[in-house]
Amino acid sequence: MHKIVKIGLIVISLIAFIMLFMMPDGDMPMSEAMGSTGITVMFALAYILLGIAVVATVVFGLKNVVSTPGGLKKTLFGIVGLLVLLGVAYGLSSGTDVSIEKMANAGIETTESGIKQVGAGINMFFIMIVVAVGLIAWGAIKKATGK
Image 1 (cartoon, one colour):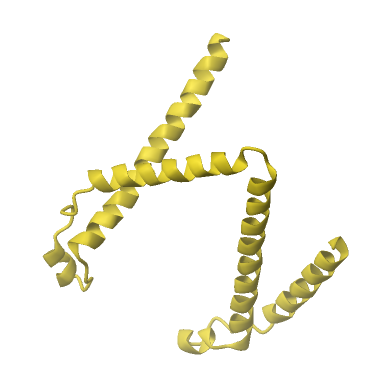
Image 2 (image 1 turned 45 degrees about the vertical axis):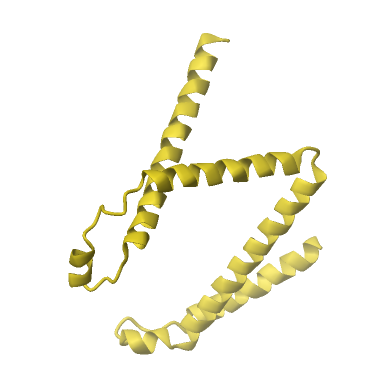
């Protein structure tokens, strides 16, 4: 298996190296450059590698959850915790943070629901930052006091 992965990586590296020389020049118009073979193949390689990474992450993550005793229970606690946090963040967002008319005048079509969802994402991010900093501080204080 290790040998197959090594050979695959060498093949992908050689293809990328060859495509490097097929990249468009800097003076080529953007519309033509985006349609060039070099760019198209590089994007395809990036998508293939991203797909392999996602599949490997999901497969090995699920394998670890199933094979570890109590892994499924811990995973469900984590998922439920994130869903509760998302519910709190959504409840805290108002949906009136931005004027819909001003957004429409700027050429961005949006709704109050869309604004509320963006606000929920921002609130969730800030809540997670506060929790992370709090846990780091708690660990540092616990370590410093020796308890």
